[in-house]
Image 1 (cartoon, protein in one colour):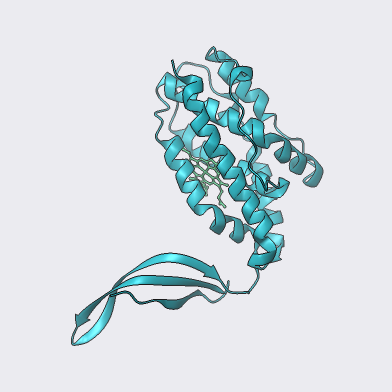
Image 2 (cartoon, rainbow, N blue to C red; image 1 turned 120 degrees about the horizontal axis):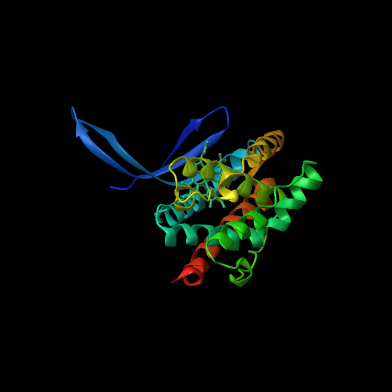
Length: 229
Ligand code: HEM
């Protein structure tokens, strides 16, 4: 039996969630919901911080990328090289928009991630200049790109705690060890919390953040042939 209902999930944010494919069971003579599959998330016209919009819009993109990069065994030289190459390819496409936001909007010096990645790859005998380019996905915006790249530093901080081939060999990665992104992340989050937007008004930034994730996904795919031995 398939039933659709609206459930008010978070009255403060005005968030509503559509559940369908409810599983019902007779309990004590009455039909009771025993499971509900969440399939579509919608928002009311209430405004919410841009940060929430971007989180919601990119949750699935992040999961996909987390699974892709997470499939690599960073204690292995080849997988570690692919990890860095994937980041280098994606970074080279996204860095101009990121630097624009960090320097122009935050007024902060921007860490030179492409240079760090080039130096890390050179340690592995890979010339970053030989890596393929991926097209920048349509709709990129500086703010949404800053959200995605500054946010990626959170994942990197977690990943490096588990160790990786370069560090074990006495060559810690400049890119993975750099901690300046954390301050940038805090500034980006502060900005994103300031803007209260409807879903319609947030649409360009939501699309921009998805575009940035898509660019990184293409970079991950392109890194496989680039680092094949
Ligand atoms: C194996 C790969 C990855 C893992 C394991 C991972 C893991 C994580 C974790 C644990 C967080 C939350 C950290 C916290 O709340 O303190 C996070 C946040 C985030 N990551 Fe990743 N990540 C990965 C790859 C990426 C990549 C490649 C990107 C983008 C290019 C990315 C973008 C983000 C963003 C934007 C956030 C912030 C989400 C938010 O709080 O709004 N991640 N990641």
